[in-house]
Image (cartoon, rainbow, N blue to C red; front, side, top):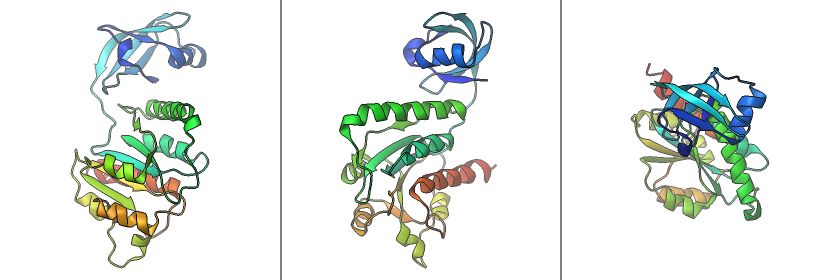
Length: 251
């Protein structure tokens, strides 16, 4: 059943009002008719089966029929802090990371970031990012849409993330040491409900200076297996591993 995330102000006790791109999608893309059913999500995570009652020119109305007892969220809260990569790699990370259960994304400008954040294009880019995670959340039947932060410097990132229970960063040099800290051992020390921040460097990884700064600010260096991963692969490796560890391995 097709799913849509609807702003809180468009809900009332018995009905949902759907506007904008979602209304267009219902009428022009899916070609739904009066009487068809859809699933509507509130920003808080609640979802309901709704039946379309009216297809107006600029609005679709749907009657709430049944509230659903469901959740497709990871049992731990995972934020991906991603060093800005070049090209459209960050969009791939947003889309696939949302499908894999990330709760938030924080892009940051790293020393070795090839891409530079352009403030003149910031609003357009952030709107596009928001659309990507919304559509990925609908496709993967998420209960919530991940939050996207504005890009930060590494110093701002370290100041912003003091509230997380565990903070790790993927460090290439850690993978080369005999007494490395594995990602798996960190997960074994993590319990359901905890909040984990996973920090991924850009192309070229973290500089020695950045690695030292992160370590001094409570981040643990870990390795993601014996191979060196591309920046767009590392976040997805982390999320897939977390999903397997908490949702499949413990079933």
